[in-house]
Image (spheres, rainbow, N blue to C red):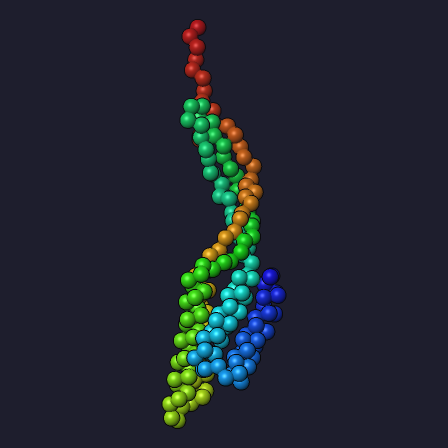
Length: 174
């Protein structure tokens, strides 16, 4: 799935997760089971979305990179150049599980806050949003980024690389 499709799909998947939770409540499931399922579904939606990012890489080949032959003293000298590549983002299993747990914890905390007499619903939503945002940010930092780069360095010059140029042959005796 590309990033645009992921961007468009995320809200639908989040809504689908909440609708599924609502239907589960009508079906008589316990609140704990519903919360667990909701956290898994939300985590899956976020995980799928995060994987759609495209990684674009550009590099600069610095001039002066050399490889000198140990016997002849000749070397290759690279002039400035550039490179570009593309890649993908993936996540290991444990960070995905951690995201789902942190979403579950945020949902549970929201429930606890709502059970307090005289609670402020706006504050509960604000706290929940912050916890959810923190979980997503923490998860995003665990991304494994893989990219391939094609280097298109500048011209390669072959010859003696020294300030004086090629060594001068010794004078032959007359």
